[in-house]
Length: 410
Image 1 (cartoon, one colour):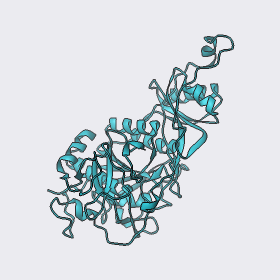
Image 2 (cartoon, rainbow, N blue to C red):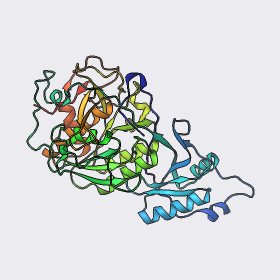
Image 3 (cartoon, helix red, strand yellow):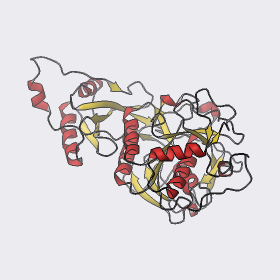
Image 4 (cartoon, helix red, strand yellow):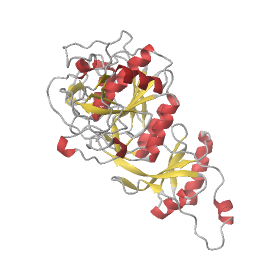
């Protein structure tokens, strides 16, 4: 997947890389299935999703299964199914998605696997990359979201709880946990890239984390940060890796929790299913709408109905020219020339633009809401943010896009 931080308005096209956790397969396979086929009959073929999207990974697929099973059953069933059709299991998933990722399959073998009665969907693995724009004006986002009537008073006023007791999962390139903006509130959670600490070798994830919960740059200044690394030091990852990260978050989240995904790409059934199941488990997700100046319905995970899909606005309360839009957008938030922490030093900052920068403002606002309403469900958070948002603030919203600007003030 790609982080939703555009290099420039002219370069809004994104190579897509997704990591998706998939479903679990049933244990009955192979010989029993073949015995039911007439002599010489070819296995039935099903539909494989995502084969025409950009950045496909040859021979690599996410397999989502119909029946929920425990981790051990998923591993066994996945191994049997993959072997039956000529592939090999790489990862198994049992929380955000029920299934596995498989490698070494031809296109025909993948279609045959999709036709198996135990399989719900097969989705081709994809690649996403991060793209950024750097500039150097002062930040203004926090100043804008704490009031309805003005465009800034050089202050940021926020609730006393400041998100205390809430965990913010940053599903991104990792986080520089030692950065002074985080104090001792940031820790490593999971690394889907190389299995180590979720340190940030790229900068994007640290910037996002700073906007969510940094002491200086953050919306929810007392929330805890957990780094979940699903994109590498070049800002690139696969559906397989991203879903693995979501699967880990779904399994390990305890208490009031938010997750931010400042990444995206073309439609991906496996990724969308993983995010939806995580939301169903009680985790509020803020996701970037995307930077392609198109309908967010064409992008994943922006198209997930129960995630908070965030479009970007600028300091003139205009829709950013790169921002995606449409009926699936839930809210606008500042996303142009946003200053936050970065990974090059413990007090380093940089200025970036993108829906990648807008989404963490909303994740931080969700943490504030949960700080005051510990038992709130994702739907409650969405309703609360919508009710408090500044209505009709954006002067040029695309047709069909809800005109609500994030507000955490009175």
